[in-house]
Amino acid sequence: MFKDLMKTLEEKMGKTIHNLEAELATLKAGRANPSMLDRIEVEYYGSMVPISQVGNISTPEPRILMITPWEKSALKAIEKAINMSDLNLNPNNDGSVIRLIIPELTEETRKNLVKVVHKKGEEAKIAIRSIRRDVIEKIKAMKKEISEDEIKKGEEDVQKKVDEYVKKVDSVLQAKEKEIMTV
Image (cartoon, rainbow, N blue to C red; front, side):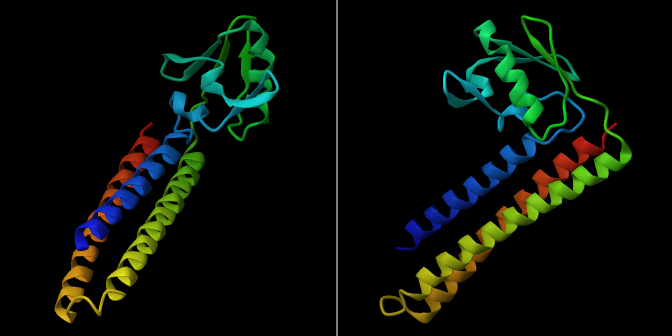
């Protein structure tokens, strides 16, 4: 009975951690990372598609992203999408590839990025606590079928899992903060 609830709990909290890691990967941390472009969509043959589906994204140097489109006709659309994004990067189009030079981060920018990281971490913790609340409500709803002691034990097990996942969130945040603050 509890096994299904615990499995659901772990799956949902695992997805929360995965989503946090994916969101943090899109932050500009002073190094070129192809996942920075994951949120950018390009208008391609009348529909919006992720930039990774219109070309190859590589990092020839630590601070340079290079986008080689599958078709030369997509260069302008890619350039436009990058200019319209919130990345504040200036694409260099040489007629065959687009190069994005990732600027060094200032101390102030690094501190602001760390604040964003912590905000996203807090959102993940809120999501985990929400999952906990839902599962505990389901456990309490079983009070006709199980004893009070079993309900207490179930709540304790849920809380142990929640604590474990909150620690995972903290470790993800620490790693990202270290990456950002490393000059």
